[in-house]
Image (tube, rainbow, N blue to C red; front, top):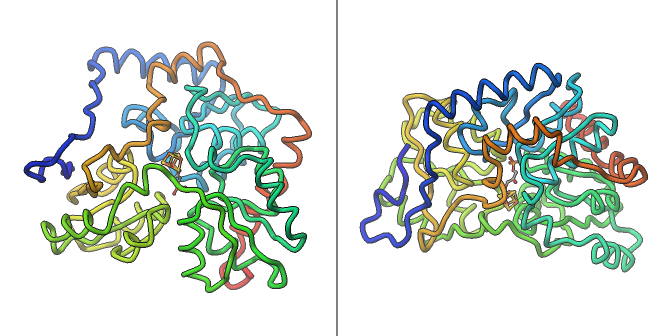
Length: 338
Ligand code: 13P
Ligand code: SF4
């Protein structure tokens, strides 16, 4: 992997270097986690942005859509969710009778914070014809107010399946929403939220790195701004990035998404080089929420079965409907998606 800060003479701050876990400690922790997993009949689900050592002990590593699909089909009694709180909440909503633990209870999301349920309800009252589509990066209370959920991996399909006579209200990511409008032509009212990490990439910074690697295609997440998306060869969810990078004949690829993605890409595409797209001021491209989970915390949450996701039954029941609708639309063959 090439860290773009290594190739920028005069670059300001370097991405923070995480202290490596000493190999002996890593071995012991990983062994203890696997033993606990067996004892608890637990499954470990990890998002693509988790630190490498957490990804490496997980049963499944993927994007928000893949993680929700895994949560539906697991027969485990305990779900250890290595991601952020809205992801673990989604797993709990889909499995109200299972124990769901999140290694760090403070692992939130800037998109989730941008959309409080009361404010959404206030906006919904202004137009009874709204069909509310919520990006999965939102609280359970917001999910409970929506008609259907989407992820970056299925947002286009979910919008295409919306009733044509309804006015779509898309929350909370303005960038994902505007990308979906570009793809579908469907006009939508967009909530003004954004991911604090993905808005760090700029047109200028991307152009600069492309001059250094003129043959390297750019793959960007749809949470990036339009100015960045328009420079990309591919805009897609983190899971689709893996498929795209496997298929391309290019040997060097520039990636504009959270840095944890590079571990998975490097593992699944040996022989290719991944270049972390630099942000304008070489500021960190790591999500501070995703990085709150560590291998030690994974062990602790399994040993204590805490922090545990607990939500009122009425909220679980109401929030399940739009998630199940998403999973059903997502599973439809493409020609019947509408
Ligand atoms: P994906 O569903 O594409 O993995 O995205 C989740 C996320 O939080 C991106 O910032
Ligand atoms: Fe939320 Fe952005 Fe972190 Fe994803 S990368 S969890 S959208 S803050």
